[in-house]
Image (cartoon, rainbow, N blue to C red; front, top):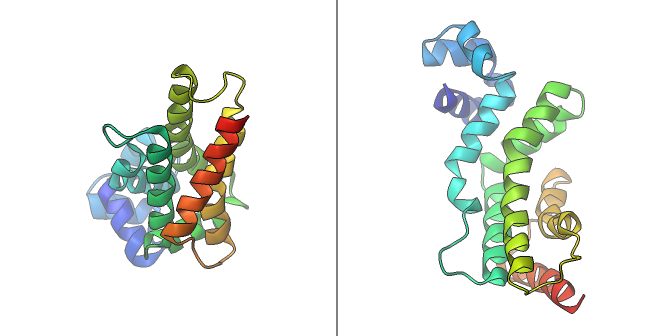
Length: 177
């Protein structure tokens, strides 16, 4: 069902991934879908996250700055890549008027990605790299907001050099604090 939802959304946009269309493509009933997911957006976003799961996994042996750079670089890459970026932009836009889509975006996309960055930063706190009083949520916002900001406003995406400068600037601020 997840694959069917993602395929429909990637080829036809979020509107093409209706519960009826997903059920038909997956060969299941609407009841089966609603048993596991509250909306078609939740299925699509779960599938998208699964398809890019490696982007939120810390590379083995990476330093904290390297892990942060990896995460932001991969997020930026996903948001820049058609059809995923435009699909996410449309889903985010639709979330403004649909609480079910808002919940799906937060639960199935934003929270897992934010938690991956927060875990890197909590590890840095426990390793003594940054202070115990570090506001993890603010640091996560500083790192991941620019790619989303540029996506939702249709701006030119960050290039790799800009991602490096962003993560280095935030890291220096955390270390100097």
